[in-house]
Image (cartoon, rainbow over all chains, first blue to last red; front, side):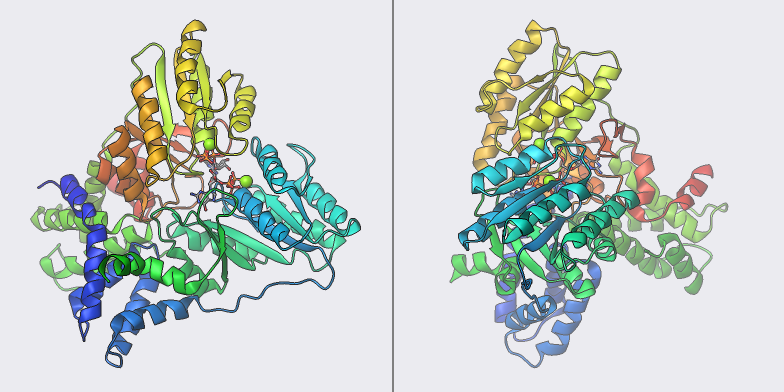
Amino acid sequence: MGFLSKIREGLKKTRESIFKQVRRLLSFEKLDDETLEEIEELLITSDMGVKTASEVIEKLKERANKSDNPLETLKEILRELLKIDSVEKHPELPPLVISVVGVNGTGKTTTIGKLSKRFVNEGKKVVLAACDTFRAAAVEQLKIWSERVGVDFISQGQGADPAAVAFDAVSHAKSKAKDVVLIDTAGRLHTKHNLMEELKKVHRVIKKVIPEAPHEVLLVIDATTGQNGLVQARKFMETVDITGIVLTKLDGTAKGGIVFAIVRELGIPVKYIGVGESIDDLRPFNSDEFVEAILGTEEFEENEV
Amino acid sequence: MFENLQEKLNRVFKSLSGKGRISEKNIKEAVRQVKLSLLEADVNFKVVREFIKAVQEKALGEDVLSSLTPDQQFIKIVRDELVKVLGEKNVGLSLSSKPAKIMMVGLQGSGKTTSSAKLAAKFKKEGKKPLLVAADVYRPAAIDQLIQLGKQIDVPVFVGDRKNPIRIASEAMAEAIKNVHDVVIFDTAGRLHIDDKMMEELKEIAKILNPDEILMVVDAMTGQDAVNSAKVFNETLELTGFVITKLDGDARGGVILSIRHVTGKPVKFIGVSEKIDGIEPFHPDRVVGRILGMGDVLSLIDKI
Ligand SMILES: Nc1nc2c(ncn2[C@@H]2O[C@H](COP(=O)(O)OP(=O)(O)OP(=O)(O)O)[C@@H](O)[C@H]2O)c(=O)[nH]1
Ligand SMILES: Nc1nc2c(ncn2[C@@H]2O[C@H](COP(=O)(O)OP(=O)(O)OP(=O)(O)O)[C@@H](O)[C@H]2O)c(=O)[nH]1
Ligand SMILES: [Mg+2]
Ligand SMILES: [Mg+2]
């Protein structure tokens, strides 16, 4: 059989093999090499990366003898990897300023739309700042979200200085006693020095109005992202003070395993997940649920038990 | 940041016995290094496994070239195998109908709208008369985005009733014929491959249009799951090729190898900037070094 057709064959079996190995894990007292290899493969295909995956496998080997439920042990290890303190920031005086950043097309603007709905539901008064003044119709896109949710919208149109828009929005919020400002920044690749400097400037200018702001800087990562996600997180963290991750597009088949590497190496907590394009499709991150989803055990249990 | 694969391979062959040539003994570690490098580049796990197997068989059967050290020879085998899978040369667009029709499809945020406008700008530069069609009626301001891009490059944008993508597509064709456009580019909404209803919509549009090209737009930063979405899009629509965007970043772009493997369809263009002229024809040989995580070594081998 040719190389290409073999691959096509093989892929058909991905999902089946995941269930198979979970089953084997549940029933085996000890882990054999084949099972371990399959688990490692499962972890790598979640985009966790080779390094993190082999670390997990090492831990599993160490602890396997001490436990009679390897699957529970595996889950425990994965949960531990994600366990870092995620503190909600509350400024002494409103407004709370949240800046949303990330590479192109990850879901920043959509996440801001969803977030503003959450705050409004809590009875908060929200201001959206259209600081993506570069991409075509980015301003209009955010405006539509502000209308959907019914919140204030601050913009200076396309081509304006993003820092000036941010200054406007934060000043407006402060003087009008608003509770939350959400800053929508343009997508930018972490490799573009001038764009990263621009982001720094936006944050610097915000501090002129409120020295402790932005209180939160959320980095939006697309769940389909591979190993570059770690590089992105590292670079954004070097530039601005990232306080949390939003992992979007988890409603697809991508598992978002890259966040294990990000949390482990950079210590940034995952705060929200995006599970669709609609206004209510944003959830607080829950590591238990996430670990179940990575291992595909939810479906397994539904089907088999 | 990554240690160059070349340095690693060099060390592997130096430190092992039988260093004069590639042997079963020393090849194991070398193959492992290539495997790790490909995984680091986000090539799909299963694709890597098959690829590595092919490389291993090749390497053991190969005659020794006296002009190359074992590591160089090994890299050459890997390189040749990669080029073989990716295709030797660039595959261009095949636009035979009048007007020619190009459908842009893909997951959310991959770069469809931007790439549609980039292609239109390219056609215009070549003296053609393109028409852009805004068939994304779902995403907030998606139509506006295309209208603004059309203005920038002075290419008309058909928006129709702004509600029904299927009707928009067929009305756009009437418009294109009336105004004698020679190439029509359809920007569709981003969608998940597992969203049956949305995939069905694409199928219907394709049925009406019978496009010359159906290009799936894929983000260069995509990881392991790319094989799943590409496979379903290809099975649903019979893609004619891919556009890989955001290659101006530092993603290694292993996704290129993965999707080529599972679909057999060529990458036709790459996106290399957010700007409207940031699109280039794809040349397989130029991306090999990037996927492998080694640059100049390859040009050295090329000379031999
Ligand atoms: N399926 C799914 N789609 C999403 C999700 N979040 C965002 N999207 C879609 O992803 C695409 C890009 O979203 P945007 O919010 O425009 O992304 P962005 O990061 O603001 O993009 P730029 O500003 O261009 O960098 C849109 O089609 C959104 O509808 C999600 O959680 N699930
Ligand atoms: N750096 C870079 N950015 C790109 C490239 N292609 C597209 N983008 C950016 O990626 C983001 C998403 O691009 P769009 O063209 O809106 O993507 P889309 O696939 O139409 O998105 P949806 O319609 O929401 O599914 C925007 O910020 C673009 O500017 C590229 O080649 N390089
Ligand atoms: Mg945006
Ligand atoms: Mg679009």
